[in-house]
Image (cartoon, rainbow, N blue to C red; front, top):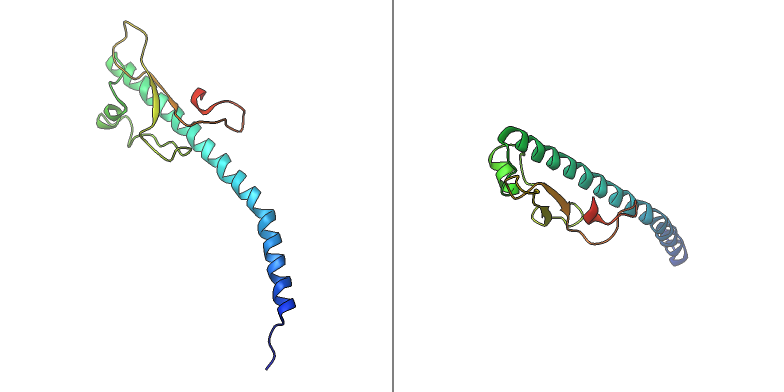
Length: 121
């Protein structure tokens, strides 16, 4: 009966480890790039919903939940950087406009690939 020698197994493991080490940075960059793309799209869609709400009702909503209740959004926006739909920095409109949510920004710490802080997106 013929089997593999220890040297052959070590060579195969070394090749697999080398290929994994080369692929992992590209994979993490791919994941981060797509998380940022999803965050940007969710911010854009939510801001559009806020403006549509304001155009329809003459005021801004009192919370993001109101956008969902009134069916301007199907669900609360998801922040893929924080992996949460509850952690947003909300901005109030300038007086005399009514409502409590005129804009939102990510609460995620750090910088995006474009060099801007997530909170300024």
